[in-house]
Image (spheres, rainbow, N blue to C red):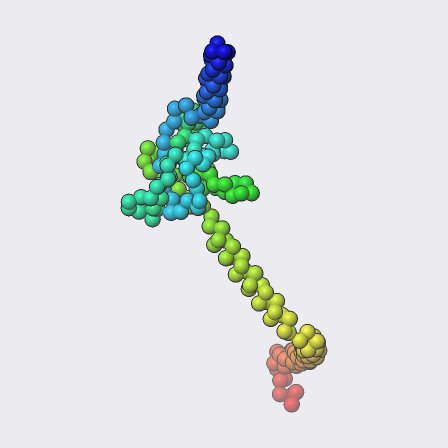
Length: 223
């Protein structure tokens, strides 16, 4: 009886230890794939507002996950209007891809609106020293964007209402009368121009005759 209990306890202990070793192995493999055990360097990025970014969020470069957010905290004193410091941990093997012409921004991804830090490589952008705090680009405020669309929709609705109040029949009659007046006016102008042209021709003929009389020396014979 005692031997049977001993073997049961022994086997239970082996299974327990085996389970612990298996869990440790899985954690190690996951950590290795995620870069937890790989050397990293840290960059401090300053934002006015992080828009719901949390520690552990991914850091991306050209769509590739290159690190994670390791720390988020308020600054004791604002720097260039920024009050939140975000520390990102980036794998050393991606340091060459960063270069010095980079920008950091907070991006929303997925239906659930998960936040992450996006690194943009811009050859024409200003150079930054990654060993010093870098000024980041604040995320787009969805509430502000919604307010803009709301104001635009309200303005469009008011404009529609104003148009609906216009008496279309009356407006068409006014436009028709205006068009008729313009046609009559244009005909009158055309008549006046024709008469002026006729007068101009007659005047020219008269001046030509007077000029010829002057040349011939018998101007007064005309009278």
